[in-house]
Amino acid sequence: MSDRSGIFAGDDPFAIARSWLAEAERTEVNDANAIALATVDADGLPNVRMVLLKDIEADAFVFYTNYESAKARELDGAGKAAFVMHWKSLRRQVRVRGLISREDGPQADDYYASRSLKSRLGAWASRQSRPLSSRAALMAEVAKVTAAKGPNPPRPPFWGGFRLVPVEIEFWADGAFRLHDRFAWRRAQPGDKWEIQRLNP
Ligand SMILES: Cc1cc2nc3c(=O)[nH]c(=O)nc-3n(C[C@H](O)[C@H](O)[C@H](O)COP(=O)(O)O)c2cc1C
Image (tube, rainbow, N blue to C red):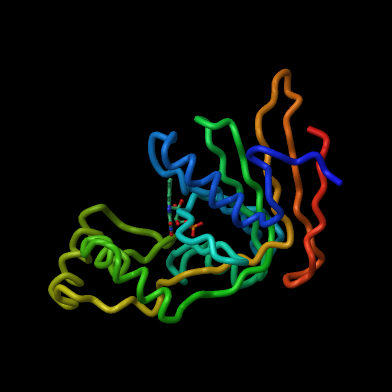
């Protein structure tokens, strides 16, 4: 039996993640849903960048990006990724590792449609992660797609979601004198029962 209680209460790690994020939405200056997304390239060299976490589902985390970006190549290539969320206002972090698949169906269409028109057109205009000759060239591309796509652009085929189904989720909260609280949820593969353990700080 573990001695979990308070902010660590409950056995569903997705419920805890949702509850911590909701609290952070009230306390963070901005982008409480920002995650540092870690990938590895074909040589095993790690890479990391921020993205926005858009959905915490019953058994997965979802974010959106350009499918021709460096991160998409690395996500598709490895089929695995990790991310961390850190909230300075709460002094807490959530670490997640797991398996990656694309979300490029109706759910991605719906999320794309929910974004501002400028963001939707920006997704069309940006060849994310590839070289750009100047800011002016990007703005010219935005003008071009604005004229071509009209007020209701479809989701670009090269833009959509990724879903991370975790095999490991760790919740960390700051404690006095570096005696932090850590609880890890681990399973060998998706669908297995979670093992929950308290970890040394
Ligand atoms: C707070 C924050 C949120 C971001 N959110 C996203 C996002 O949701 N999707 C995305 O593609 N890039 C996002 N970016 C930009 C990425 O960090 C990165 O620059 C871009 O996706 C290219 O990464 P890549 O070359 O590794 O593919 C965000 C950056 C910051 C600082």
